[in-house]
Image 1 (cartoon, rainbow, N blue to C red):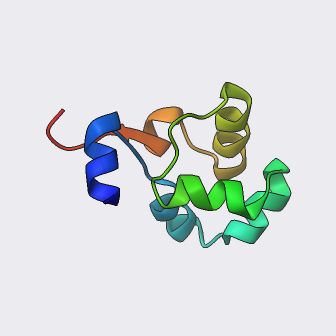
Image 2 (image 1 turned 120 degrees about the horizontal axis):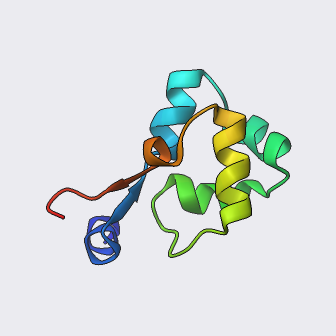
Length: 77
């Protein structure tokens, strides 16, 4: 089901990979960006349908990444 949703939206969130690369936990990211673990988990598991620019910016600042490293086009698009 998750793969189907990614294909419909056409964008994949790489939050899980970026957290692993940086050795950061979802809990720590939640503290840094002042968001709930539940909301970040939705992003991490590629279930999000939308994201606020302010949230996107906060995550990118915390992870020291660019938007294009976090959000990528799903394969086939």
